[in-house]
Length: 145
Image (cartoon, rainbow, N blue to C red; front, side, top):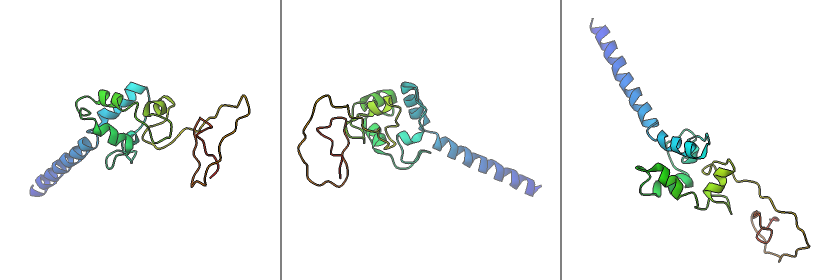
């Protein structure tokens, strides 16, 4: 009889522990739900976190969201407040990435599209650079590294 009681107690304690872990892991899912509902997206937790599963360190978008003092009480307002902030992609705001279907926390940047020239254009030479600079404005672009 003691063995059955001990086994039952073990199952109850383990169940409570698992339930506690599950509720902790999904405690902030409402933020993601608000984000996806606002923009009609189906992004995962990598919108704000380095890990797609959530938890752990935040990426730059998640840090910006968290820096809004009212993010906890008004996540939709905090999301709206950081729409116009520059993203990790040069020349794009967070909202511009979202409108292109790109997760603003992913670090994925859209390919730069440069309009075809209508006339001959001359651009100044630039010093050697470590990596190419892409921009839709050809006057800013430095495509050769």
